[in-house]
Amino acid sequence: MAVVQRVYAEALLEASKEQDQLAPVRADFDAFAAALAESDELRAFLRNPQVETETKLAALDELVSGGNVLFQNFVRLLAEKGRIAEAEDVHEEFGRLIAREERVLELELTTAVELSDEEAAKVVKQIEEASGRSVVATRTVDPDIIGGIVVQAGSVRADASVRGRLDQLREELINR
Image (cartoon, rainbow, N blue to C red):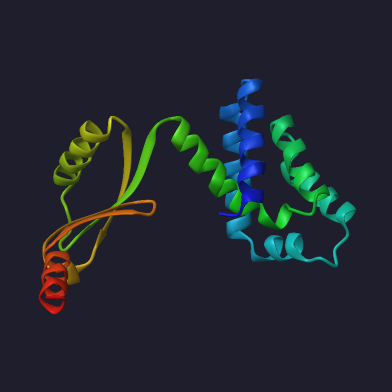
């Protein structure tokens, strides 16, 4: 994530907390990001450098009208500073900052076979107890890992899979 997106996300987070507006700002930003994700035309319009800032501001004012005033001002600021094309990245960083603040650990659990809801809940509970944080987990299935589990949290990866162990043993044999 670029420093610029982090700066804007941190500024919005701090302003939202100061004004006790975090929940409505978050809801409006989520809705705005969803609108961007769903509309190729809107994204293209906002990213087009040939469209004047005033034209973008008018469209954005229409799009976010009726929402939280702090968020409306934030969207205007992004447009005025020529950063509105980066709104999705700022939103992603904003979400990460909130998760960190709320001590939520987002991770991906990869297994060779589909975990039942009960099995996944048990794994998540163990991670929550070990980390002291609340965990939000997505699950994926990758038969290539043969067995076991791979846990990915950001750039940290814990590989307790059969495939991971076989690869590790192969490396040890090659490097002897």
